[in-house]
Image (cartoon, rainbow, N blue to C red; front, top):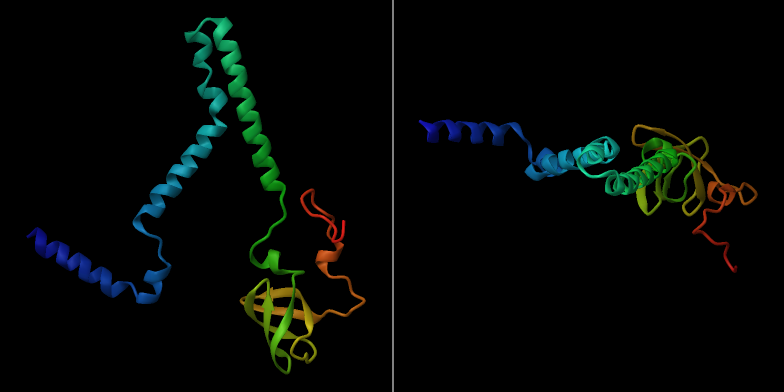
Length: 171
């Protein structure tokens, strides 16, 4: 009876999932790894609370320095988490807006673009030629709305302040 039941279950799975969706589904271990990472994150945030029993178990001469180290480690974790949350969005539609690239193919106002090493479909208000530089002004679904970049218009990368690791060319 078990063999029949498992055969039915596996055959219903194979018909319900198309080959295209199978390629995009994570493996069976993905959920477990993701769950562990979330748990570890919460444990790191609760570290000072989890270390409180140290004050009751060990003598104060030992427990206070141990708790101080735990508190410093927790403060560093909090600091880096806050820094990560303050970073600008780099993915999705928000990350694409303001990006620059070039026209690969042009069919009037319908375009094929290369932006960030990737090929995108795009549209513009005016007809553009192959090789022209463009800037993304909006994203509608998977189609980028672009405008021509003039030589006098500064690109978004020219107007961004330098980060500590980025140097000016020639310096």
